[in-house]
Length: 116
Image (cartoon, rainbow, N blue to C red; front, side):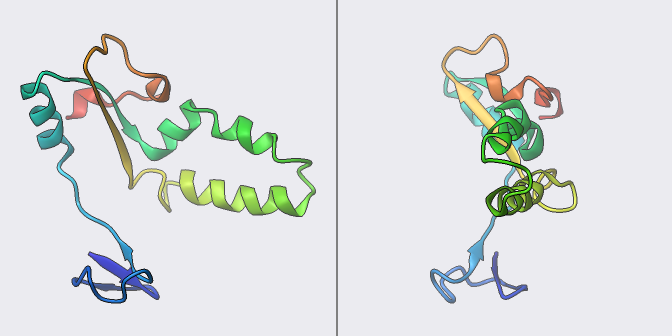
């Protein structure tokens, strides 16, 4: 599925380099295939939970004073990445590993492995 100027289209080769491409992913099927191949599921989370677990807010704070233009721009980008109305809940993160008895560091806030 492609998106160009807020319109969806089905041709991934239409407007190369200009269209945003996306795909619907069956994370359960990927996790099951990984387990069959000898991997373990190290974590599964929303993009927002993963980024928060990885310290995105601490990185945002390091950008500079909250009144600076750079901080305001960075805040808008972080908002888009974390917001449930934007990308935060829509996008997911799945990690497969050779040895992962505990969730990885990006999955400390919300590990959704049981939903797979």
